[in-house]
Amino acid sequence: ERRAGCPRRGVQTTRTASSHHVSPVFTKALTFGDKVAVVDQNGEHTYRELFCQSLRLSQEICRVLQCSSRDLKEERISFLCPNDASYVIAQWASWMSGGIAVPLYKKHPVQQLEYVIEDSQSALVVATDEYVGKISPSAEKLGVPVLPLRFHSSGSADHTAVEDVPLASSASWKDRGAMIIYTSGTTGRPKGVLSTHENVQAVTTGLVEKWEWKKEDVILHVLPLHHVHGVINKLLCPLWVGATCIMLPEFSAQMVSLEGLSSTPRIRVVNFLIQGERWKYWIFPLHVGSELLEAILLVGYFIFSSLHFPRPRCFVLHYMTEHRLQSFLQPG
Image (cartoon, rainbow, N blue to C red; front, top):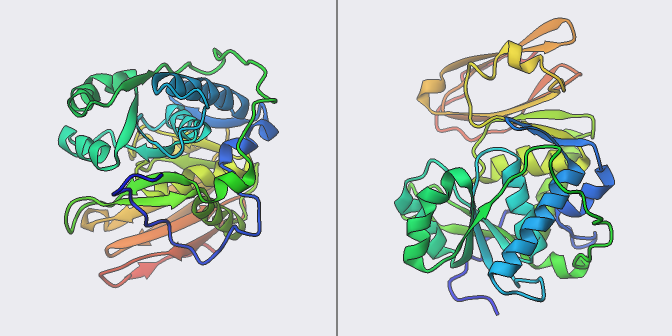
């Protein structure tokens, strides 16, 4: 039975996944096997490696919560991870164990992290070693256990046989809660928004179709992972099709430079959110083969764009403005 007060509002979409099988993205991971899923400061991580480490963590989660059935029945799992493969592992492990993922943001003050853990009624907090010290006092105060995520760098995971691991049926995933994302709190206390696996899959597959995602794509990820845009648009979409996600710890103009974008694997998709008055004018250079393509955006308040290569084009897929969009240069 769902606990009283658990958020019920979900990701809004006009699409429906009711006529399709509904299952989380991790169920597709073994199909992509040894293809590189994530590149981060620790190296390259294949789909198989992420699946194995997620499975191992899910077993630890169930052990700590004394759940012998391996189904937490939508208990909330808060997790605090950097922007790297450990985030994917914590998210997938939460789902593998039948829980609802509640991502915490590393830059939020302790009081806000504590609020989210308490408000979501999380049964467990998963944290990488670097954040255990930050979150442990709050978790102890709330009586919530903390499970350190012992993240193995690429190539060190023990690849046990996982092909026969039982997963929940499509019917059982459909109405299950997948994740709770909290609002920014600009008009009051942050509010938790619950999305089911059906909601998440509908939005993900809709974006995959409209953006024409392919497994050959490589996306640069520099956005926070406690909002829908960073989670679904930039992480779940590429992982859904077997593409590669290059994850930087955070946005840095120096890191996201021409030299950085010429690395291997070559980035084919750049997706960014430009926000606030300080972003009045941003020039983003990118190599397309031996050519240099510049997309110049002159923005007012909010704009969301996507650059999809190798066909050099720039689309404004969605934007919200409080000030007029003054100028937009579209490459020919």
